[in-house]
Amino acid sequence: MRARSARARVLLASAAAITAVALAGCGSSKPGYCTDRTSLENSVKGLTSASISTLKSQLTQIQSDATALVNSAKSDFPSQTSAISSSVSALKNSVTALPSNPSATQIATVAKDASNVVSSVKSFTDATSSQCS
Image 1 (cartoon, rainbow, N blue to C red):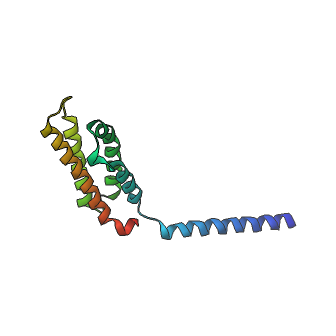
Image 2: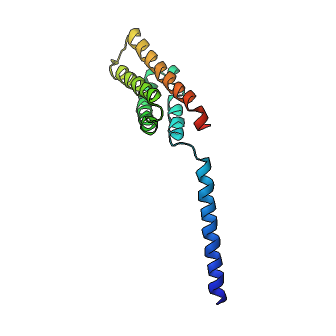
Image 3: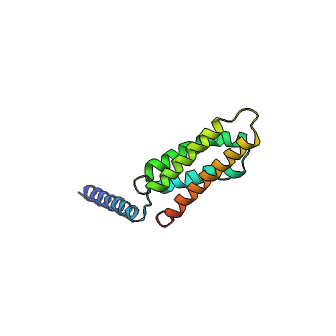
């Protein structure tokens, strides 16, 4: 009898602990796009000062992180996520169009597009600062 009673108390205590942890997590959770935002911010760090070869290698990660962010936040922030999609697409197009020996004008276009990506990510960060802080 004692073993059964002790087991019941342990089970009740475990259930209460699990419930308490679950309820504590509910009140403090941030939207999923906050993690996606951080990933994209990390991907675009240094983008405007990157070399063309570095930019080409960063582009795949930037596209992946941008897609994740847009998918998770587009219903809450449609204009900001649209700007991110457009700017990343323009950057991809300008980088893809670069020949092996790009002209100064082509490099300037890539630099402008990279700057636009950084700007659109910053706009999203500013718009979500209260939700993700």
